[in-house]
View (cartoon, rainbow over the protein chains, first blue to last red):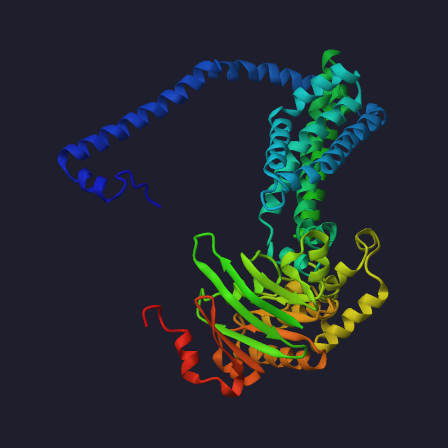
Length: 273
Length: 247
């Protein structure tokens, strides 16, 4: 693929003159400078200091030395927070699915009963998605206190946004011919929904749900850092108490959870495809 | 049985799609509608099913004017009208039998069909409709795996499951190979007679009209040009249906 900077035929004719060629070159140069300026400002804003990477190596090496070997004697005490982490994700995903499905029907252009319903549903989906799950967790920790429940609520609300958008897109891309055919047989709306729409999109919806569960398991690990329970909270506590061998054990568990969730989700989605 | 009287419909661009259209079809009669693209054939079928609302006129089915109906009354009236299209419009991930059985949904309570499925008697009836179209052996197969001809036969079985009084077919063989197309036409003709169903079939294949129809209706610019038994239709009149506007 080539980038046709000269544009439509009239512009192309202009670009063949010497003035035109000079102007095109100047534009390219200006664009290159602009790109460079954007990269440089990013370095300045994030206060990037490559030399710190070199000095930081010793600090990291010291941390790793103190974290080895992992404290496997603490393994029994990690079972409960591990279960909490998985259940936070499970609860959040299920709550998200239950709320997102009806919202998605309202937010799908080919299904919505009215423009008002469409924009209202799109608004809710957009808002719940725009606010990060970590921020939702902070809000719910303030509202309902520390523990796994605010984490589950945070993931549930954020999942409404993520699932709602993907569900709505799936519904919009659905082949409508079988649906219209069912409507003309005299079937009622709920019958068309249960016998036509759901069977048509179910595999896609399940695939999206499994992917979301996979994502939520990763997120639930982080939510613990703001007091929303689970294994993240254990890591935060161990870090604060300088128990690095406990931290390394917890990191191994996280690695196993994330990898297992990813593999199981991918395998199930493959079967559904 | 089915009567279309003085039916008129205008497209959103202002062009008349149907003008003072009159048509009667008796039970067991097989009527083929011929006409060029944009002549109003599909609009006629859409007006009968009330997918579009005519500007004027009446569509009578068993003594009821469908043009006066809305909501639940229209839904109930539609139970007697089955429709098939160029593409079978099946739910591809469901079994052939499940697709056929959806034709009966409108006769049953919503919650029963949503949570309890259809009665066993309806599933048995769906099987017999599949046998009628020669596909009983494919009942449990996924609809998405069927050939075009098989899928169209399943669509016809679904229409039969509806127990219709009228079957409307909009270019049902347009996307099929000649052999499959012949099969579908033979099937529609046979069903019209054996099930005593009034069939209105929109076609582009003139030869099929002369081979299978009891009556042939020619349309041009939304108006009936001829409505005659097939052996009385002049070939040149059919030819003129497809001539460009200026001719």
